[in-house]
Image 1 (tube, helix red, strand yellow):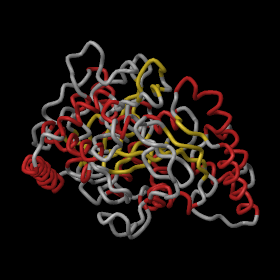
Image 2 (cartoon, one colour):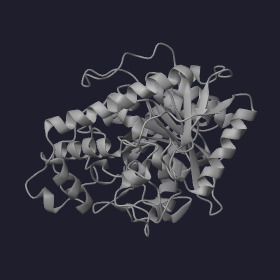
Image 3 (tube, one colour):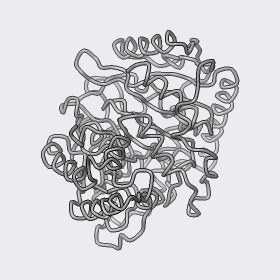
Image 4 (cartoon, one colour):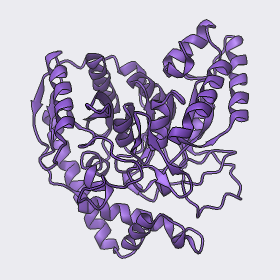
Length: 456
């Protein structure tokens, strides 16, 4: 099997048997990036020398019968939001000065490095990860491997596109309103947003309680393994949670038959593309028929878009005020408008929006007393033309208007995963979202693994 087609678990198995070496796998990924990424633009930085040096050290460990970690020698990419020692973190912005020390690892980069994973490079993001498509004046447009005329989604679009195109088996992205799950759905891969604080962040995100980090992979098992690496507390994040008492990979095979599963195809207020709805309906019906009964139920809250957009704009303004003089003239015009809006809100406005988030969290807490998990479409539409923030020809004005299934669960800080469940007649991937109560990351992964198995 070509290493670019292998999952992280398959690569580790091949290393253990001697069938494949980390150097061979890494070189195959680097060759694939050279050959394929020009059409997709998923990477903004590739460091062949460093990647091969890390792979050689991993190969030495495997040759002596000692692996450093769970995914020692497995190539991975990192979204260009996470500080990574030795590489600039420009966040997709022309306003960030590249000429400065880059000698700190974020918790994400530190845990991956400690595990012995091989860093291929950094993936593209819109400026400061502010929107649900991936393009910037600094890095250009990131395109969908399923159809390069379409968007990969965002803001972790580079990560999702890289994984979908075989340019690395896994990546880590950020998710403040759907930024892991949206591109996972559009590109046909797995994207998991764990409970807030489960993966520590440093520096603290200006988007505060909305901000999560999460793995993007081809399988739920790979996502669970990455969670076992990433979900360790870090003293630099005061919101980081205690270590998970067992392992996420060990929990994904648990018996989920008998759980209470709800399906809300619209959340009570979303208009869904008919083809997307039909694909998700069929997936839910298959899960039900396989022995995990599904009940139709809406959680019972209205669209919180106003509260979300206020919190999002306030976070963007908080970050951008620390940018160098003249930055306002350099940033994405759409981001500039968000910046200006965010500066107009008061502390009372912010706390009112947080109260809306708390109310939805309470509503979902009550909902989960009856329904262990909630199923929805991940995104109500398939991927649209690349280079636009909203579907061209629509009457939409901002990205949250076409992502109504994802941002509510950033407000509530709940774990949520997107898994691929089919393709439209045009060949565009569609995702199913699975949401669980806060701190039920293991449950969400287990249900996702069950659904993945049922759907083949």
